[in-house]
Length: 176
Image 1 (spheres, one colour):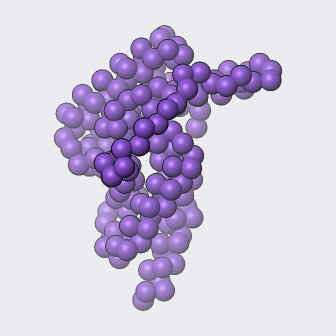
Image 2: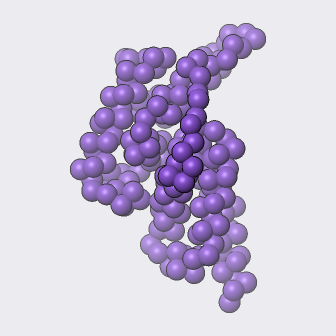
């Protein structure tokens, strides 16, 4: 029975790892922190996998654990992160470089948002969850999701380097 649970967990991890790391990256702004955060959340999920796997949506449960682990990271050791305002110079400019620069600006803008707003924006517009699903993941009301999304998007629209005439969801949708 335990071997069967282990196999189901391994199948879940293989299938969801890339998306969980991507979500963690958007929450943290650093690929190494994202991988560590994902591993931490999955280690906690493994300990309770029998219960989690019986839930209606195990992925949402693990995603919630990811957000919680990210919040815990700042509570435990007040990490001061210093992100640059501009993407490093590139050797040549081409169409792909513009997308990289735009993506870098978006990631830097996300890093400037408070953790709750960043989580809402990432889950709502990058992960394309409904307001109700985001509320469930974050353990808050849909009204809170709406207000945090509104405030987060307003800050991103004012962030230097992000085009003011483009919507955040339109910018992110093409960069998956």
